Amino acid sequence: MFDSLADKLQATLADVRGRGTLTEQDVTAAMREVRLALLEADVNFKVVKSFTEAVKTRALGADVIGQLNPGQQVVKIVADELTELMGGSGRELAFSPRPPTVVVMAGLQGSGKTTAAAKLARYLREQHGSSVALAACDVYRPAAVEQLVKVGAQAGADVYEQGTGEDPVKIAAWARDRATAEGKDVLIIDTSGRLHIDQELMAELANIKKVTSPHDILLVVDAMTGQDAVAVAEEFAEVVQFDGVVLTKLDGDARGGAALSVKAITGKPILFASTGEKLDQFERFHPDRMAQRILGMGDVMTLIEKAQDAYDEDQAAELERKLRKQQFGLDDFLEQLRQVRRLGPLQSLLGMIPGLGNELRGAKVDEREFDRVQAIILSMTPEERRHPELIKGSRRLRIARGSGTNVQAVKQLIKQFEQMRKVMRQVAQGRMPDLGALMRQSR
Picture 1: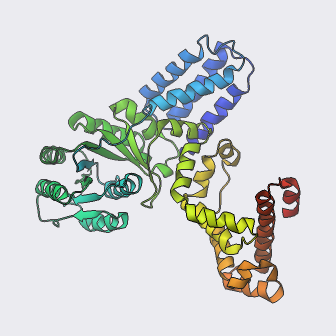
Picture 2: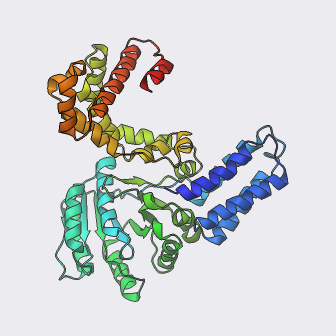
Picture 3: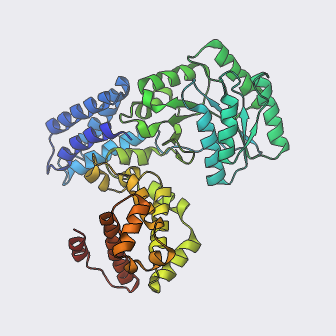
């Protein structure tokens, strides 16, 4: 996510951060590099100009030049201005005190609108405990209704549909009445898209707005289209008073032009971001956290929230009991790996750890290693998983064949597991393990 931009900004600011003193020439040179990085990231040129001027003005103030650690101050200023550029503190949906809260999803064809509607439904159900219904009002795109029925079921939401033969405005009004009668907390309306903005599209949206009185209209745009996404948002803003933006395909956007430009150009905040193909890869957009990720400062709050979502108190208590009684086996190890996988792609998680993202930038994490480890463990008998010390000779060969790996991979996994179990035993006993010795043993 934004790797290209992050690389360039971090390289530029690393030079600034390392200086003991800063002159006006140093700041000017750094801002020139920042400006080039932003332009290459497909950020709107007007936005780039105002951003660099704001940073330079603050950086040349008395609170930076001549101070003890001016480089760090400049980095903080860039982080602050990036946060403001993307929307400041951000905001949530406008929930109605009298349900249902009605949310209309708008956008062009191909932006990922239907999937985003289902992802939002799942998010509201998981994060807010809301009962959610989806209204299938995209009656023109082939299979759009069927797609919404499928992804809606996966999201745990009811789907209100009348096929493709009815007027979408009438479907929207009917869906609102049904959601009210059934006591739904939220109704999300998936509207029709077009290949381009036209009068028919806008008239239909205006009529749906009239009959449903939505609390939020969200514009869905494809982050990977960069300035095209911003142009679409700007055109929509001229004719439809939408309230916020949903950025899709943010995980594949190496540049960041849309995310960094859309708020400044339209005045509308980014509310949510889709960060992968799966329904759970959807999150509230936090400008301050995104700025920290771009600058290599990590994103600890998002990492904590992901861990809390995957955290099971009963499992944690059982794990602690097993550690204290030295009963931690390969089944428990496999469950911990699965919990880590539920947090999301490992490469993304590493980028949320302050400093670590910089160290590993460019290194590729092989997610398939999880599958190999799982295959090896599942090829063992229950007794072998409880007592890995039994695995020798013919057992190793059988496990290697069963998992599609080799004897060396089986030996390496058991060795690493025993080292990890040794560390966990020492921690459970209140002793500090000799990590240096363990590192030497693992080589």
